[in-house]
Image 1: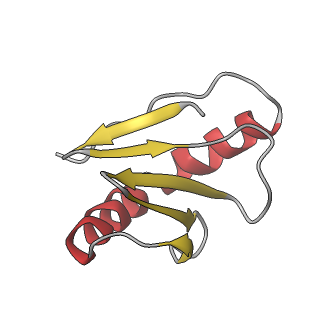
Image 2 (image 1 turned 120 degrees about the horizontal axis):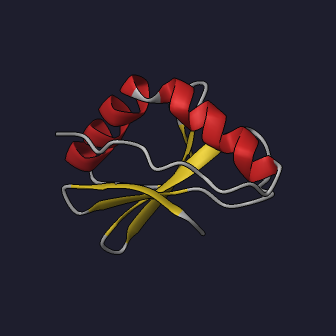
Length: 86
């Protein structure tokens, strides 16, 4: 699964040919969650509240880039890295 961003110990990834709705995976240590690109809701899994807040802030800033990477992933094209949260 390609890594598209990393910040504050959080790894953001996106699978190729993944199921809908469009989403990305966030991992922090042992915790993982799938997060909808459109609604920014947790689809599955759980992250600590502070970490989830950082992930949602990052995703809101980079939603257009996440959508573009989702389309690339669906076509099995290389994904573009996305700037980390600073």
